[in-house]
Length: 201
Image (tube, helix red, strand yellow):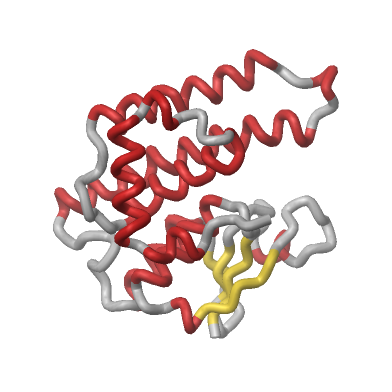
């Protein structure tokens, strides 16, 4: 049995969980909660960066981050399923994943700024800098959303990033991005694991 160490709200852990479901591997993966803020959590031995998600193989080997884990799972399922084998579509999917992961990173940094720092230490300039990344990325995605019914690593990553914005920023992105909203609705309808992995806390 493989073990996925993650947190229920993590967009990166969610990406891995959706990928596993799409590949028919979810029954082979146990989900174990990790606490990135706890120095006693074994996470820091499994990933020296102390970041999630981490996939533990049966021999104890630890794989991280989410991009590497999804590639491992895709290979485990035969390859070419979520990460296309052909060069052009592969690069498109991986580039979309990179963009989506950047959106999620920028959103998490904004959340951490208010969660981890005392109010007097917070930087409005830093928060705005991160928010601008999200704004530019969403503008680009609105102009050219992923293809309808596209289910590859890029589409999964975008859905998870948007889901995180819904969770932490009350869906503020939606009003200015109707095409992207419509795409996400279609993705959710086509991929039951998207709803099944939503944070319920």
